[in-house]
Amino acid sequence: MLKIAFHPIYKHPLPEGHRFPMEKYDLLPKQLLYEGTCEEDNFFQPEIMQDNEKYIQSVHTLDYLQKLYSVNIDPRKARKIGFPLSPVLVERERIITNGTIQACDYALEHGVAMNIAGGTHHAYSDHGEAFCMLNDQAIGAQYLLQNKLAKQILIVDLDVHQGNGTAEIFQNEDRVFTFSMHGKSNYPFKKEKSDLDLPMENNCGDEEFLNALQSTLPRLIESVKPDFIFFLSGVDILSTDKLGKLGCSVEGCKRRDEFVFKQCLNHEIPVEVSMGGGYSKDIKTIIEAHANTYRTAQLMYF
Image (cartoon, rainbow, N blue to C red; front, side, top):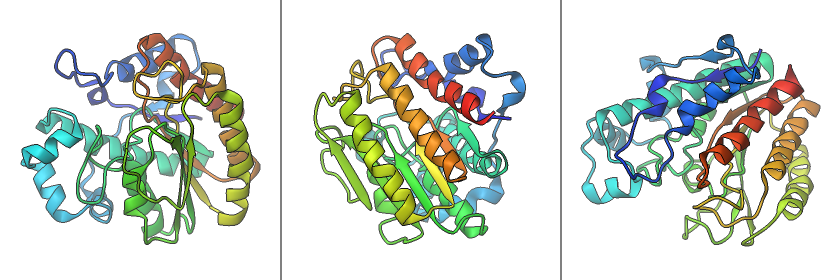
């Protein structure tokens, strides 16, 4: 059974006019239930688990966590996060992180599991930025490694923005290979060095994007030999995205997901999927593109 992390706090409202589309976290599960792709049993509700703090602390510095948890971050650094910080939003981030950790266990059992939030790849070891406070997939990777549930991990980050925080966190960790395929001229404007970066030119369309992915990912799997994959399935690669500069279609985004899942299935590698970004003007476009990831996983695995 496809297992999906979702908590009502994911849809916590932001001040009116804020550009981050929180409503997608409410609408996506409703769409999946309405169309019959998922049933209530597909969803699990993560909570804050104190036992998992050690994995968070293995990724983020204690000084940063103390300031974050007490909502006492320097205002200049808080502005880089982009959210108006509050205890509820910090709680939300901790719950998202635990959703990804639990999804790792479900992926080991079922082959795939998903988090309707997460993909917070701009969170560095010692600070947050760009709507990201805790790096959920980096923390999930540490959970797997420390519990000897995986020996070699591949992070496949296909959001339009480079996974700069993830690259920094694992820059000296040979057991985690970071692969980021992103818009060359998109934020972050100062890129970190992933194990493999594949920057794409502005207006890159479906065929160019897919050709690059199809010529890269199988080779990476053969060379890295991962026994677990994290997939960041951002849909901000769409031509309609307000914060992205690529030119992919909804169908092209779906074909991307199909290819990643096919590689995982063919090599029998469990995969955890976190949603990542999506900022198209029309919320229907965002929901359709995200829903395709879940539809594809349900169809291919179950």
